[in-house]
Length: 547
Ligand SMILES: CC1=C(/C=C/C(C)=C/C=C/C(C)=C/C=O)C(C)(C)CCC1
Ligand SMILES: [Fe+2]
Image (cartoon, rainbow, N blue to C red; front, side, top):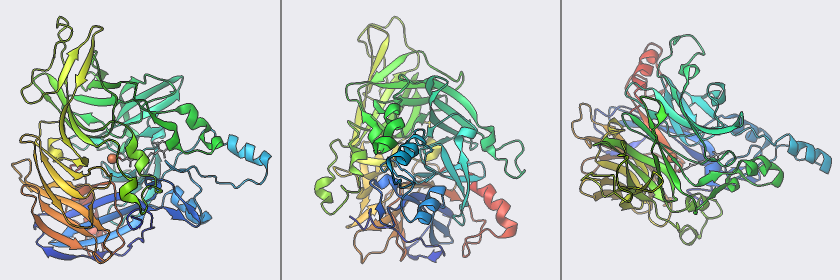
C-alpha cells in the first residue's frame, strides 16, 4: 500500500498527452481539476496521517478527444517552509511539528508558550473551490490558496478571518445557480461565544476588474448558530442545502478547544483533540434561507459521524436529506499511515461501514400532534420524525445503502428531488475499489471495477442540453497497485455505466480527494496556458461552478 499512500509523488510540470483508448465524447471539453495529498515525507521526517500530506494539484485537460495531464505541488507557505528546512516544520491534522529545535528547557518553555494560540496550516489539500472567476485550493483551516487552474500555479494566500470570523471552515461549499458560494465555519470563543457561521461569497463583486479586489471582500454572514458548547464545538466536513433551507448537523464528534490550546505543549496532534461522544445526540439544525434564521423546532437523531452530505430537498412540507453516516469516528483512525502499511487488509477494517441514510424533518410542526406520533407522511421514505414530550423531535432515518463514500450527484439537482448518487464503493476497508451509481428510486446499483484499480471520487458532467438526470458522463482518476498498469482517467457513460474511454498517462499519479470540472474550450491545450486573447473568455467559461 506504500505505493498508494506512503511514497512521495513526483510532480508532472509539463503537460503530458495521454494514450486514449475508446472514444471521448466530442462535447466533453474542459479541465478536470483535483486535489489531494502527494508528499508524506520531508527529509528524514514523516507525517503520521494521510490527510497531512502536502497538497498535490493535478488536472486533465480534455479537448477534441485528447487528454493532457499535469500536476504540481501547491507552493503553500507550509510547503515552502518544509522544503527550505528539509523537514516538517508546520503542524497538520495528525502531526504536530516543532519549528525551532530548542536546546534547553528555558528556550523550550518560551517556544511552547508562543505557540499556545496556533496559526494553522495553509496546506490546502482537500478540494478546489470556485469564487466567481477565481479558483482556490481548500482545506479546513482559516486559509485558502488561490491557484491558476490552467497552469496549477500557486497564487495568494487568503485568510478567511479577514472577511468573516471563522477559525475553521469546510472544504465542501455549495453554489447557487449564479455561482454564489455558501459555506460554513466555526468561530471559536470569539467575544466569549462559539458559533457556527454560515457565510456567503458572491460570484461577482461590484468592483470586479480592479486588481486585487475579488468577491471574497464581499463575504457576508448569512446566519450564525450558537454552539451547544463553548469549548467543544462539533467537527463537521460538509452540510446540505435545499432551495429554501440549509441543514447543518451538530454531531457529537467534537473538537476540544482546551486540548487544542495545550496540544503543542503536550506534544500531541490536532487529531488527538477530536473525540466522538457516543453518549450524546446529533442535533439537526435547519435554517430558513428567507429569514436567515434557524427554524424553531428542535430536531435530533442518534449519535453518528457524517463527513459527506449527499443532497437535500423539500417534499410536501418536509426537508429530506441524505448523508453518508458512520457509527463512530473510526474512519479518521484508519488513515494513520502506520495502518496503511503492508498489513493493510488486516489493519484497515472499518468498525462501522459508511451507510447512506435518508432523514426527513417536518418543516411545519403541528403543535397539537400527539406525543409519539410520526410527523412524516411521505410515501417516498420510511424515515420518521417522532414528536416527544418536551417538544423535541426525534428523527429516525431510512437506511438506503451500505458501503459507499465520496458521493457526487448531478449538481443541477443539488437542493432538489433527485434519483442518482455516484460514489466510490468501500466495504470494510476505507479504500475504494469500485465506482458505483446508486438509484434511490429502484434501490439498485451499477458499478465499474477492475483488478488492482483504486478509483477516485467520481464526478458527473452533464451532456449539453441533457434531459435526464443521468444524461452525461462520469470522470474518475484511477490509480493502480500493479506497477505494470498505468494510471488513467476513466470516462463512463453515466446512464449505463459502460466504459466509453480511458486516457492512460505514464506519470506518478496520487490517489486524490476532491475536485471539480471546469467546462470550456477557450485555452491553448498544448501549452495549457490561456492564449492572450482568449484568457478573458476562458475565465468566463470557467465560472460555471456546477461540477
Ligand atoms: C489542520 C487542522 C485541521 C485539519 C483537518 C483536515 C485536514 C481534515 C481532513 C478531512 C478529510 C480529508 C476528510 C475526508 O472525508 C482541523 C481538524 C480542521 C483543525 C485543526 C487544524
Ligand atoms: Fe470531503
